[in-house]
Length: 174
Length: 398
Image 1: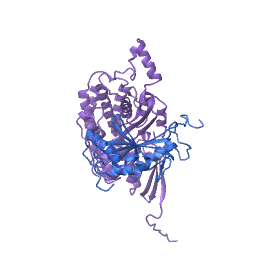
Image 2: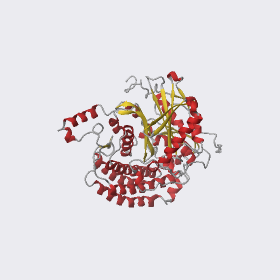
Image 3: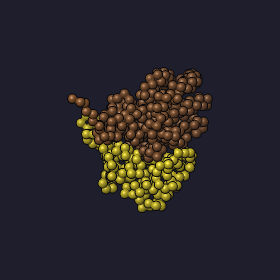
Image 4: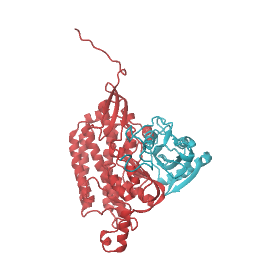
């Protein structure tokens, strides 16, 4: 981020954020129409299911658009599936502090969706470095292009990824 | 034979030093691999996982209610705050609004845990920099707070106070009066701590200009809580995305300007004052009524009814043995915990336990900013920087 460009305040009301989230959904659909697979609304939260190949472009657009300014990546969560036509679903929770808006991006990988990897967004937000490392460590989804994809919570020589659904609760060999 | 001196050019002889995982100043089992050029830090790499207990895996194998005790062990300096954060996330998933009395009590305990957590930070931070007296003062007040928590929940640390849709028990008799009296005294205590540190030359020398984190870097690295606010960003979830009814309360969000260790100190001190202010308002407005929502499929019935009524007995049996059915969907709910944004990200596939749950812990994300703050600092500054970042390893490693 350019020096002096960071949001400093004041906070906007959550109602303004909901408005901006709606605008962000429309802007992404208009600009990356073919890459948006599905739009999900649940409990007031908006999610967009995207084609993994366009993830970095969408993230960069959402971060840099002067109206939207999704300047913070709050959370990354990967989930593993055994019975679907994809192995992984990765959720990215984006926040715009200047607008007080939230948007979730979803990407699927593995199985019939191709290789079990999604592109890294660590070039868009620095915080993705550890967050993606953690999700790979626990779930095993690869983040292609990540600069330092190594264990972070599990020991270095650990085998397997404990949050996969076929990994027993008691551990392997217990 | 004459003694010969040898000059070493800076940057030519680097040394790698292990700090932790068992080191009194790393506040738990944090390990840092420091690359040093003399006394200067060239590189710092945090190594975590020594306290990893697989909480997220456990969550997938427990009902929502059964997971509450595990949240005590996240940020173990503010267990009540974690209890509330988790309960709010599950309540969002099952779409339940808690009663006004429940919300007010939760807010009160959240602010009391913020004071308790900040007191521990202040005491240990001061000890790390050699000011041992402050530690004695803050631990005396923490003891009082622990007495309050014990009166309220039955235990000092593993509180497990919330339930999905309510609380495990109501306030004990005379609780609010006791807390009011303590708040009165505590405000004066805070002034006393400040006389020991705020204008203390040694304290300022050790903290001002040390471990600077710019607002740009803080946002890029996802830093939240007092650490972000000290860097000059006005962001507090209690104001931005109010939960529990914080929007109706009058309090300020203190922010810093330089983002150094001293600013982080000032911000947390002021946050304690603001928490006192919120506590006073909550005590004044404490509504009556039930603490649990009236939903027999979600909340355990009162014990006396379980022992006398058939229907209540059945509900109790089902909730305890099977849990309640949550709808399919994905929700994220965060609170402004003492350390920053504590979020629970729940992916539900229906059923009584989450399909996948990510705990977005503020300490884990904040810790990523540590290398940036340490590079160029002296080894003794690293101690000050870690303390000012206030990480709790229970929450980092989960």
